[in-house]
Length: 347
Ligand code: SF4
Image (cartoon, rainbow, N blue to C red; front, top):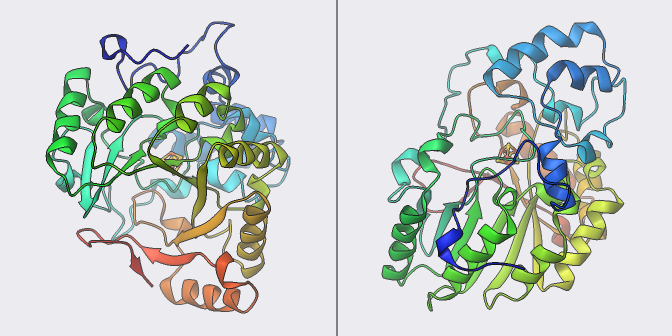
């Protein structure tokens, strides 16, 4: 049963207990069992010794996290697998590169309350969970001070007061980390509080969990999400068609059946999806799963991720060529997030 009392809820706390009880939901057990050791990751995928030093060095900066469900889609023995490249640390992460910084979006300047980012008119972003199921090597929040932005119960009340007082806010975006790494009990409590604010219309959830642990979309989640009065949008994060297997497609179908609009955002990544064929296959596969491509982001210049960068000129050329191959509704918008801008900036 979902408990909605604030008295026993603390958002963003018990994210990945190392040993959940045997009766815990399947997704929580998978979350607790993610591969966290770069040596084990290389061994499981049959990668040679040469990968190990770089994997260890990168891991020391931003730890490895790979769920089994995601690992099972990586081709063993292929160091260039597009899924592997997203999760395997490389020695290049230790390079200091001009222009690549710890907080590329200057989010620290837009946090009026702990765990709340208010950058755009009419919508706010709540850090609903400080952790992810997977650690993507290119993540622009790889250095984000989550501990400073994991609100206590009282601090959540301050955030809710902020939302109540600003009647221009119509949409709340749950982000993280990955908001769906928080428990259903915590999320149901938060969403119930949001529903009490009359001017809020939409709930948007930015999550990679349905892609990396599709078992996350279970009955308990569908119960609180499907019954919300708020219009519901889930923005997935997939970068390659190989990420969307049948389990992921089933999770998407369940969300759709619960009245959720499904969109996807990707990041253009060197060595992952920087070819027209890869981008076309991704859009086609997303649509087969009932998901519309929304944004294709150029890389945010976060330190440790410069080796994923695709220059703007090349990005524009890729997208123009893609446009010749796909119907308009399968075309993601090529954008960049510019610190201080009122919306995403088209390229
Ligand atoms: S799931 Fe998103 S927030 Fe988490 S590490 Fe990957 S890109 Fe970053």
